[in-house]
Amino acid sequence: MRIDPKNKSNGWKWRIGQGVLIAVALVAVCIAAVQACRALPHRDEAPPLTIAAVGDTFAHAEVLNGRDPLEEIRGLLHEDDVFIFNMEGVLLSQDPPAGACRTFPNQSRLWSPSSVADFLHPTRRTVATMGNNHILDCGALGIRETLRELTGRDILTVGAGENADSACRPLTFQANGIRLAILSYLSMNPNRFSAGSDRAGAASWDICPAESTITRMAADTDLVIAALHLHLRQGWTDHSPSEHIALAQRALDAGADIVIGHGPHVPQGILVGESGVAFLSLGNFLFRPPHTMPPQAHESLMAKVTILPDRLEVRLLPLMIDVKGRPRIPTEREASWMLGRLADLSAPLGTKIEIDVGVGHITVHR
Image (cartoon, rainbow, N blue to C red; front, top):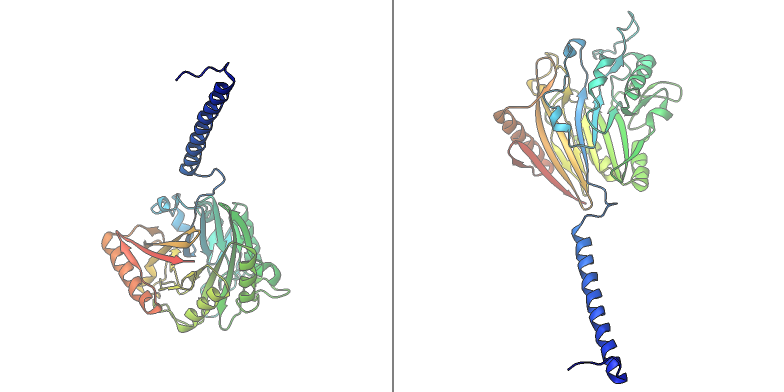
């Protein structure tokens, strides 16, 4: 039937019909727009944050010899947002004068040429933790020089300073929309290396105090990372002393999401808490083990943690240390043995590691 818009009754029908067609068209457009918006990522949605952590780092001058000491493993770090290493010892721009650096009883003196730091910034953000027992090997001067050399290369630092106030101060920054707090503590008995009210040194678990600081940072930020340099027991072994396990658990209970352990110079097991993970020892990274250390001191572990809203995805990458102290990619056989051993060490702690093509995997639900 033809509708004549000049006819009054037919005109109403015509207008109603047109209105219905327009409304249907608008609804179809809105539905399509909603579906398109759902299919596209939000422009303000930040990508996941990936953190790579390694252990003790110290290099002799001959390690450089005009070459990048990390060249064999540098490709492993291209995808990461934050890189964290433990600066074991101090950085000096020139050889120290005779007697300028003191050696503590039963402890070697560790200092690296400052040029090593040129190679230690492989990601957008790099953090050097300094709460360890070698940061005082050249006294307050060594701490000042190390801080200057690192910060001059845009490497963030935490865990040592001219006094306890500066040494204990947490490092905070934002990456990929996530607010991070990183803390670095030495735990050693007896502890002769801690900073005091008027004495340079390392941040110490007891003096800072660590637990209350971790809890405070957990309330103020989105992610708390605590680096623990653990020397509560003597000896270099892949079996974690009960004291080390207990301290890592205390850090997790206080609110740490990730605990990075080092100090024993040998990779050790992994502890998963209610919503966090503790690597009890990542071993050495850029470090030439002396002959007094066991063969396992040439084994290393890089831990990568991707932060997701409901979980932490952990990847465990085994490395080997060559005769000059440089990290390298292990052979398939070496990687398989190391990850199998790591799984055996972690099982008594209640942690199961899935191994796939030379990489260990752990999922921590939050």
